[in-house]
Image (tube, rainbow, N blue to C red; front, top):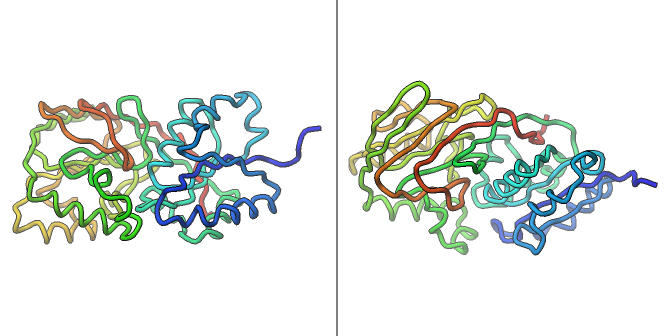
Length: 302
């Protein structure tokens, strides 16, 4: 006889953030079991990958057996989960349990930081749809960043990240600014071609990046567009005032920023540049961007 219990896939990163999730793992499983759901945990760096697990599911019946995927970790963990879902053509709601340092994608949906409140969202039946960014055949949920300071998260000491949180990113970024040089790039969209000298740039699906809540204040997660934010050369004396504008979300009107929305973008340069996708090492230039409209279902408060 078939079980009456629906299963829940839980992908979790035991090393994310300050360990809040790991210490509450049993509590989360208990709450789901009390609601009649059986949790199937998969460690993000364990012997069984989420990719392999999703590939093993029967594509005709998996939705009868599983009700959702819990993604517990930071944006990198969520990116890993979503790429495996799309690759294996899995369509299940995603419940975000933000346990990383910045949790930028979760910020867009106002996911709370308290464990019981997170789980209550997952046990509810409220969803919203979200777009998915694509770059060179890889998928991203929140941001792709390009330039000399955008790999800050990769260079930041993990212990420092866990102790200081997003402040660690800011402190590391400050050490990079004296070495910045403007780099010529070409941006091609269906609407226009841009030739720019840039310090760095971000291609946003969400609003927040690196814990800065208003990097892309006009982004909409389900408008079928990506928000492109290119930062031009900024005089050193104007840097502090400009940084304040970034904190307030008013920088998009600055002459030092090129901002536009598009559903397709080709980024080219004669220079090699570091790239970062959802906080992890990115792809090499040239970068070919597109967007999949409303590909994800995200659990929300209401």
